[in-house]
Amino acid sequence: LVGVSIPIFWLGIMLIMLFAVKLGWMPTGGAEDGLRSLILPAFTLGVFSAATICRLLRSNLIEVLGKEYIDVAKAKGLPKSKIIGKHALKNAMSSIITILGMQFASLLGGSVITEQVFAWPGVGRLVIQSITTSDFAVVECIVFLMAVIFVVINFIVDVLYCVINPRVRLQ
Image 1 (spheres, rainbow, N blue to C red):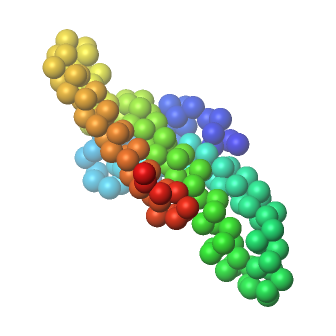
Image 2: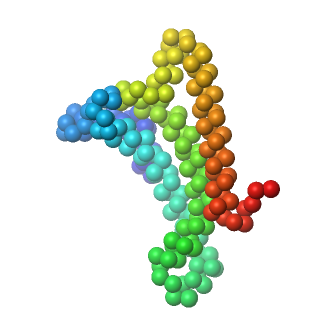
Image 3: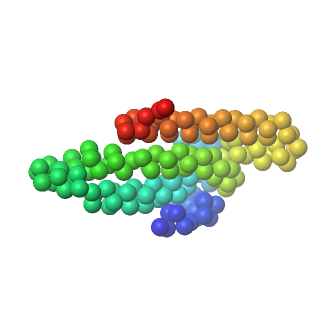
C-alpha cells in the first residue's frame, strides 16, 4: 500500500537524501558513475510497479486458491509449492500480464519525472528540452515512437494470453 501511495518524485528525492547525501553510498544524479548511477532511479521507478503487481497477484492468488480444482489438487496430496506454482499461479497470471503491459506504459511516462529528479539523460529529458527549445519535430518523433512501443507491448500481452491460457485463441 505504501509503494502505491508514494509519489515517484518524492521517493526519488528521499532516496537521494538518504543514500547519496547522508550515507554517501550513491551518486546524487547524472550518469557518470555507470551502473551505480542507475540503482536509485531504477529502484524509484520499480517501487510503484512492484507494489501494484504484488497487490494484484496476492488478491488473484487468494481468489484462485479458493477454487474447486485447488481442493482436488490438495486432496491428491500434491505439495503446496506445486499447487501454487503449477495450478494457481498459472491461472492468476492473466490479469498480471495486463497490468505488466500497462505498467510498462506508465514507466515510460514516470521516467520523465524520475529523469528530472536524478538528472539522468534519457528520452523524457529530451522531450522536455525539445519542448523548451520549440523543437517540435523531435517531440513528434518521440511521441510516435512511444505510441509504436505501446502498440507492440499490447500485441505481446495478447500473444502471452494465448501462451498462458490455451483456452484463449486468436481468431
